[in-house]
Amino acid sequence: MGFKNKKKIDFVPMDLNEDNVETLFNRCLANEQTETKILSSLFPANNGYENPDKPITFSNQKILENKKNIRYLFGQLETVHQAIPNIYSTLGTKKYTNINWTNNTRYLYEISSFRICISV
Image 1: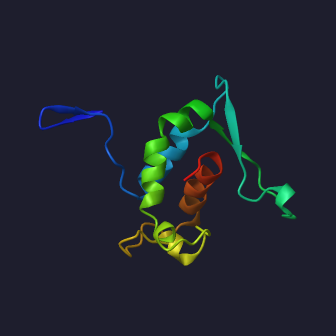
Image 2 (image 1 turned 120 degrees about the vertical axis):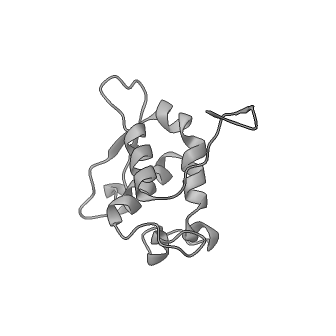
């Protein structure tokens, strides 16, 4: 929450960059006290992957609290504007402004894991 022109604002948009994706990802992870959890798997066995990944466990409450930021980050991806469902393509590393936001697949996986949890 912040203030602009002396008016209270509840939402401050996050720029799509590695630090913000990692911060949001870590913020939404479940811990031992989390009551309601959401499992996210990028390569689940039930989709036919021979080597499924270990699911990531998110806090449902934290996902809901950060839903606007998650959607805002997705909205900055070039793949969203090109209607390309595969974030892992080379376009996944670009913002809609055609500027690279990452070259590290780790951050692509982190932002992609939110896609399972939330309809974006």
